Image (cartoon, rainbow, N blue to C red; front, side, top):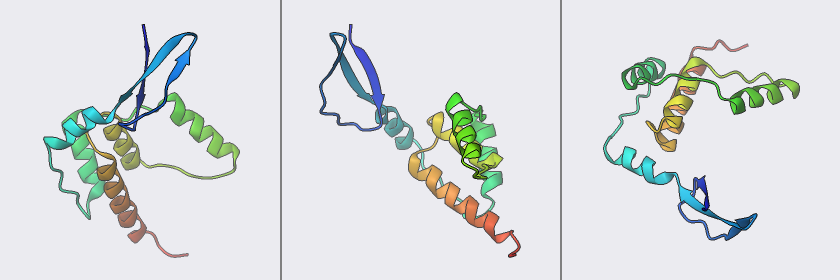
Length: 124
């Protein structure tokens, strides 16, 4: 019996043996390519929060914090930083985790969302 490790890279050229068992590497990208192939998403420049909420509702995706999310928030707090994601950013994470959005789509939506949010902030 071999151990299987999922990776983000489609090409791994390492040979790894743990306790006499070979570790096989399998790319997660395969399923993401299938998702990307069947859809073309028009990324909005405005109204991003509403767009993301509607998309998540239609695809029945909700954000559920993982243990790693909680760990990252704790480390951030201990470092004295104040980084807080909003519900739109959380939904984008959930949509990516569910395989509904590609990295590029999440990046574009996040940039547009942050630009839109910044426009509504009064300078100090």
